[in-house]
Image 1 (cartoon, rainbow, N blue to C red):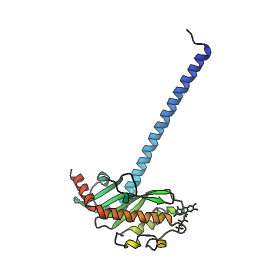
Image 2: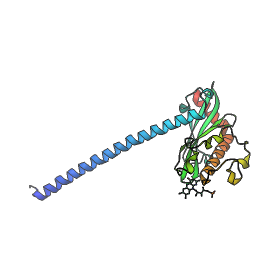
Image 3: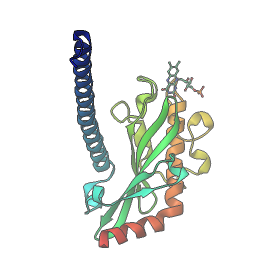
Image 4: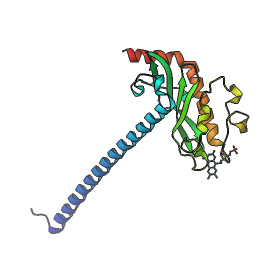
Length: 214
Ligand SMILES: Cc1cc2nc3c(=O)[nH]c(=O)nc-3n(C[C@H](O)[C@H](O)[C@H](O)COP(=O)(O)O)c2cc1C
C-alpha cells in the first residue's frame, strides 16, 4: 500500500535529518581528534623544551623520554600516576625529572616538572601548566619572571625544613606583590617532591636501570 504523500515527506525529512546528525557528529569527532592530537604534540614539545632546560645535555646520555616510569604517591600531589624521567650517564643514574602537581594554586592545580640530581640538589623547576591570574600568579612562569630559578641548587637540607616556605610564612622564598597563594603552593609542591625523592631514590634508580638494561 502506497504511503500517503505527507508520511513519505516526513520519512524523507527524518532520513535527511538523521544523516545530517550522523555527519555532524562525525565531523565534531574528527575535529576533536585533530585538536587533541595537536594539544598533545604541543604539550610534548613544551615538556621536551623544559626537560632540556632543566638538565644540561652533558649530564646524561640516554633518551629521557624513553626512560620513564609511572609513579603513584600523594607526595607528588595527584591521585593520577605521575611520570618520572631518569637521566643516565654511562649507564648510571645522574638525575630524575619528576612530574608533580601543586593542587592548591589560586585557580586550581599547577603542573610542574622538577629536576633532581642524584646528590639530591634541584637541577631546576619549570611550570608545565596552570590557570593562575595573569600579572599576579603567573610569575611562576620563567617567561614572566626569574622567580622559579630560586629553586636551582636547593635541596631538602638547604634551606632547612622551616625555610621551605614563602617569606610571609617565615620561609626563604619570595612571594609576589599581592599574590602569596600561588608561590606558597609551588614551594610546598617542590618541597614534597624532594621528600618523595629522598624516600624513594634507591627504588627509582634501580627500576630505571632494570628498564634501560632490559
Ligand atoms: C581577581 C583576583 C585574582 C587573584 N589571583 C591570584 C593569583 O593568581 N595568585 C595569588 O597568589 N593570589 C591571587 N590573588 C590574591 C589572593 O586572593 C590573595 O589576596 C593573595 O594571594 C595574598 O594572600 P595572603 O593574604 O595569604 O598573603 C587574586 C586576587 C583577586 C581579587
